[in-house]
Image (tube, rainbow, N blue to C red; front, side, top):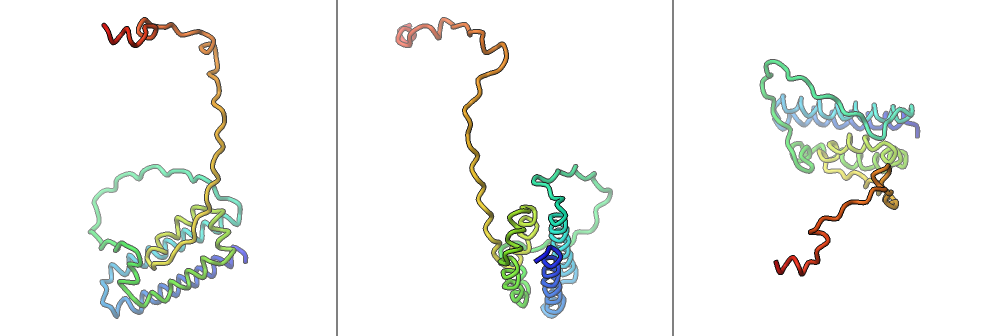
Length: 181
């Protein structure tokens, strides 16, 4: 399966999830601002994951992404919007009809192509983790990192290594003699 097919299948899954969110969220009388925050969060996850898959297909991923500089503080703050719930399967607890999407996500994550993509692009695993937490789906285990071989310590380099250190009187005196004094 190509990276375009991976992105298309994920987009179809997200469309189904958003359809459930829109249809059943209003029936459950969930506040519109909260539904909007959930909707935007799911779309942001889709956008981030799609971008990572597309960059991986183009060979443009970085093993260690660069850090962004901190954002400058904005002027006046906007009115507070409702915070997203937390905890495992919080979206399923809020809208039980979205539980139908969790097995579909599990099937998509279990595909060999997606599993290979998760192994080669660790950022994708971090991007999909919030969606898995929302639905209570399990993210496949990350591959274990190979332990680094320890090399023998190098002797100190430079002229300091050849100069002997002076021994102080306390270092030269036997311990028993110090205890008697």
